[in-house]
Image (cartoon, rainbow, N blue to C red; front, side):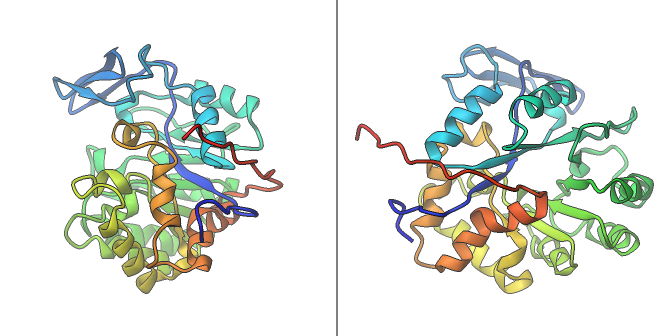
Length: 298
């Protein structure tokens, strides 16, 4: 599939982040913006946003502009403790862009989670103080009854996959999206991918270019991992995600799509399924309008 010919191609970003103000924490240390997209993270200054986010505001308008430029039809807003709870801001974003945006509330061990107005619930399982996921059964059952989905980032490898099997078995109708492509560069990552053999479990690739950043564009190792995952759970269970804006400190938003479109290791059917068709069905995106390509000055 030529990158210059995207007619009829639907692209859904299954893993993006937004905030007006970053006020989170990791490991008991605060995470906050300082200047020019730089944040304090684990006591160090890190370039967590592109430098054009000089005011620290990672807004919906900036994301939509990037989506329009890259030809991305819709996006799913997930969350992370390092950014702080963005429930209130996400509700306002969905109100402004209802057809193009799906939103997750943030689950916290210390307080109730929100459901009203949200499409899904985000669980940062790798950061939970109690890693035993079986205790989340009431949360998973509640989401299933409400017709919501669960977006979950698991700890590395297979340390939490047995707990996930327990939850999946008891909530067979619940849509579950496993993030970060199963932490593909860690040992036993295939165990997370294998969870998608269950009917309503899917894998999204938010952070894939981050995990393979050491090899950089065109991320051939990432494409080989996609090929391996297809062999495990099938092409119909994998969804593209950018992990915007953190990955945009190294690449542009279109580049996170181009390496898929330009690959000769995936066929057209697999590219279409991965980049949007699977996510449109999983998250319930309907009636998305084609985005007319904008010619670049180059």
